[in-house]
Every structure is written in structure tokens, then in C-alpha cells.
Length: 167
Length: 278
Image 1 (tube, rainbow over the protein chains, first blue to last red):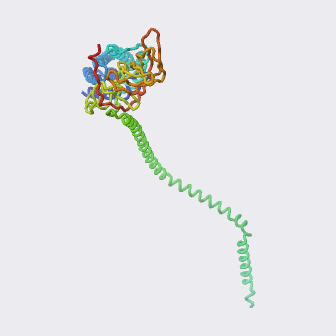
Image 2 (cartoon, rainbow over the protein chains, first blue to last red):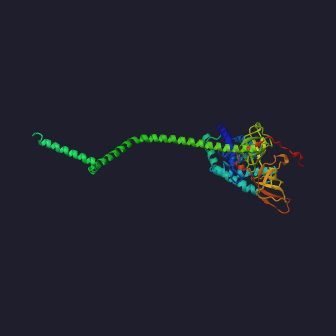
Image 3 (tube, rainbow over the protein chains, first blue to last red):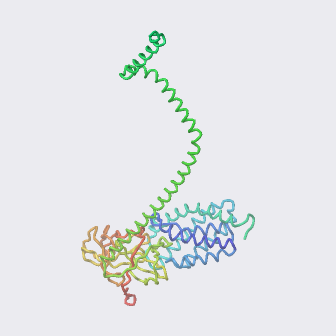
């Protein structure tokens, strides 16, 4: 129960950080997504059978606050969760590498979904601008943020889970 | 009489005369060099002794003073930290007060509207969408579609409302289209946002001579925004052959990345013309 509680608190903190700090610190027109990084890092470090429920609950909260449709946000976060669950056994010796891989492809997926949402909603989207001004800076910020988020989540999950015990 | 001239009395007389002579010489200053020469070694000795005494005294008393000084230093350090935090707090208050004063100035200079002030508490999670979240909602009289401004100009409109917060669609969003009027040219046009937050001027007739720096105001057409609110200035213009309209880029009046507080115009009735759109 404790891991679920801690992950929920962490999710909430990540959302607050995203809306209050990270989202207000752009590089060109892009900025990082600390919530995505939290989902990736937590999914990598702790295998919780029903962590997807936490993702659905808090993803719905993000969708409620955001102009992006909730289903799009849920799809991205759940895809990252399942991707993390599948690769954590293959790259267990180098979790940081797995974190980088997840961050890179997760950000690509997220931005593809966001651009698709914009296209479906009728907005004019310039793909070169989207890649050069938004996607690449966002990937860079996410890759940089991935290191501290990974280290922090690793310490938290270690402290709440006794060694050798898997929940 | 014989006793008067005895040897003892003579000695006394001589000693007395010598003493009186020395006193007279000393008073008259003739003995000063001799005194100086004879006293100098004494003074040096006294100085040496005094220095050693003070050093000895310091050796035994300084640890106590050091402890006191350290304690005082810690106290002063704490006071400095406290004062610095107070300075930061005061600077923050001053900055907020300046923003509020400028918003108040705007409200006084535009008394035809009623306003509710709000603080920006967050930005949209998607970098492709230009939205922000403010701390006033339906409990404060905020409704869907209400225009949002700052003292510098138009910011956007209310896109979604809950009890204590609202989401504002900025005019730089890709889906935002604002009907505007070029002040000097007196021509209607449209300002459109983009996914990167840059704004472009559209639908400017080819025959219109638009100068760089031209002021852009809301026209009020469409019923979405009230007229005569600053939107921005013309940055560049592009004229292409075989097109009906000119296009240009717009420098917004408002720096959307630095907005901390906004005003919502609450007495403006948004006109929904959707049913009339063919």
C-alpha cells in the first residue's frame, strides 16, 4: 500500500511542478514534461501491478486541467508505463540507459500525439516549426531532467521497498 | 661656635647646596638630556615588560573571547539571513504591488469595463498549445468566453471554468483568431496564433499600405473581444503576387511568458455567431 501512496504523492508533486515551474521555463517554444519523466522513472524502478490505475487517475487529473484531450494524455502515459514494464527486465543492469531510451521515445510519442490533436482540432501546424522549435528543445530538456528524476525516484523506491521484495 | 663649623655640618651644607643646585639646574632644563639618557633604558624595559604581560594575558583570555565572538558571529549571521529573506519578501511584494498598480491604472483609464484581477498559476502541459491557468473561477463571476487583458493589451479569453480556477486561451494559440483593426491604415484584418506562439497578421487587402510598427487594435467584429484593445504592432509585412491578401508578423504587446497577473473583463457579453457561420 505504501508504494501506491508514495507514488500518488509523487505524481501530484510532479503535476504541480509541471504546471507551476517546468511549463513556465521554455527553451525556444518547447519545455519539459516532468510528469512523463515521473511515470517513466517510477515504472522502471518499481513494478507495481496496479500502478496503471494510479496513472489513469492522475492522468485524468492532468487531462482535466489541460486543453489536450484526456484520452490522448492517458494514451501517452500508459504507453510509457507498458514500455517501461517491458524493457526493465531487458536492461536491468543499466537503468539509466533504459530511462534515456524511455524519455527519448516517450517524448517523441507525446509530441506526435500532441501534434495529431492539433491537426484534428483544425489548427494549422507547420511540421518544420513543430520539430525545430518545439520537439527538439523539449527532447533536450527532458533528457537533461531525466537524470535527476531518475536518481530521485531510484532513491525513493529503494527506501520504501525492502531489498529483494517485489510488490 | 666650634660645633657650627664641624665637619658634619660642612658636609650637610655641601649636600644641601648640591641638592639646591641640582634642583635649580633641573628646573632650568639643563639636566633634561641627562634625565632622558638615564630614563630611556627604564622605559624600554617597562615597555618590554608590558608587552609580555599583555601577550601573556591574551594567551589566557583569548579562547573565551573567541567563543564569545563566534557566538556573536552566528547570531549576526542569523540576523543577516533573516534580513535577507525579508528583503527578498519585500522585493517580491514590491514587484507584485507594481503589477497591481499598473493593472489599477489600466482599470482607471478604461472605466467602461468591470474587471476581476487574477494571478497566473500554471501553463498548459502541451507546448503546442498556448494556454494558461488563473486562480479565479465561476465563484468569482468568471464565465466562458470573457476577454482577458493586462495593462499592456489583449491576452486571450476564458476557455474553461471551474469553481476556483479558469483556463485562458492566449491569442498566440494556433486556434486563436482575433479580428483586428490597423490603427493608421484603418483596415480590418485578423491576427492568428501558431503552435510556436508566434502571431501573424492575415487578411490584409493587397492595396493597403501597411507600415512596420503599425499599431494593431481589436476591431470588435465577431463579438469575441471588445473593440480598441491593444493587440500588438506590425513587425514585418510580406506581399506575394497572385494572392488576395498580404500577410505579416506581429509583435504582441504582451509578453506571454512573463505574465503574472491578468484582468478579466466581466461585463462584456460574448456574442456567439456560430449559428450564423455558413
